[in-house]
Structures are given as C-alpha cells and as structure tokens.
Length: 122
Figure (cartoon, rainbow, N blue to C red):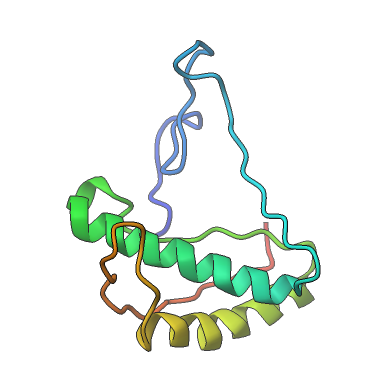
C-alpha cells in the first residue's frame, strides 16, 4: 500500500511537523515558469527529470533515498488526470528507457520504467 499507513497524522511518509525555527523555516515551494510552452510538454519534461534524479539518488544513497521513487502531481479535473496518465505511460517512460540526458555530475542514470497509478478520488 502506498503510502504506508502511520499512527500519527502529523508524521507521514512525505512530511513531518517540526516547530518553526531558523533551521526549519516552514514550507518551501518551487515554481516552474515556462512562457510559450504547452503545459503537457513542461509536465512531461519535469516528471522525467524528477524520476531521473530520484533514480540517481537511489543509486547513490540506497534506501536513504525515496524507495518508492514517486512523483505526486495534482490536477484540477479528471480529464487532465487521464490525459497526463496516458502521457506518463507513453512519453515519460520512453524518455527514461531510451536514454536520458546526464544529471548534474555528468553521469547517466540507469534506465527505468515508470509505473503509473492514478485516481480521481480524494
């Protein structure tokens, strides 16, 4: 089952609550600005890069890295979800299996196939 069930709602596989301090200032968000690009094209490239780097971290650090190598993406409609699922199954998998560009240190990550699961339910 993903993510694994936990006892405390404040402690999840993805996050844990910490008191705010200089060393843990709270949530940090990242954004992508890609004017003139199609959203699906950007999502495919972003998902590929995240999965590639997840594989790199797993190869380098083993179980200390995310053993699920998951990308969590949120959509505003079931139609968007269904479209991205098809793209992830086709385009993202092809990009990962057929060869990916080198990561920051110049090495290539090993090819992997992307398992895709989706749900329109909350």
